[in-house]
Each structure stands twice: as structure tokens, then as C-alpha cells.
Image (cartoon, rainbow, N blue to C red; front, side):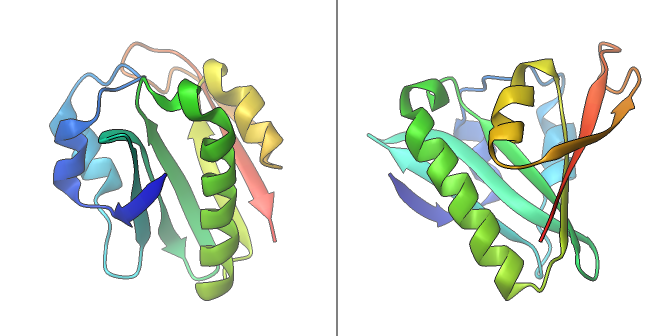
Length: 138
């Protein structure tokens, strides 16, 4: 699996595993600023996932991941690359807290990465489903 610097137009090429109601809204949520770090992972000419860290404030970052339908075929690589990204950027950016929000279907994988549930966000999605707020401390 190779990684490339994330570009916003990569989202136009992702065969999404998650149902997003509006691509432009999604682009607004993940648009990386200069100090943020984001990568796109590609295998066999397919985007497997995009991910990054978005600084919330000094020492705190929000982790986002946009998986494609192909991510399940590369589960081991997916976990390894996410973990490598976190470990690398946490050190480079002097981050002590990483947080993220997820839906039910991703609880197992986020917990495998060492994140712990902090709270439930009621009716957080466009279709009024709950999301969960997870954190990991370094």
C-alpha cells in the first residue's frame, strides 16, 4: 500500500463505505489546513482510505478516516497504516490527545487502536443516528 499527500479531489474518487448525504459538506469537514496532516492510501490503483489529523487546539487533534468499500480487503494494512500515522504525527505535532467521532459499525476497530469511549452524541448524523466520541491519550 502506498500513501500520498491527501488532496481534496481524492474524495471524488473514493468508492465510499459510509453513506454521506452531501460530498461538498464532507469536503468542508475534512479540508486540511496547513498545520494539519492528511494522507490517501492506494493499493492496486484503488483508493483504500483517506485519513488525517486536524488540529483542534495546541496538543489536541481530531482524527478522521474516510474508508472505501475496499478497506475490508486490506484490514491488516489499514490498522497498521492508521497506527503509524497516529504515532508519527502525534510526535511531530506534539499532540497529547487524539479524538474522533464514529458510528456503531466502527466501534471495534477504533477500540483496537486503543481509543476509549468518552461520550455518546445523540442524533449526530444526517439521519439522526447516534455517534460516539472516542479519545486516546499520549
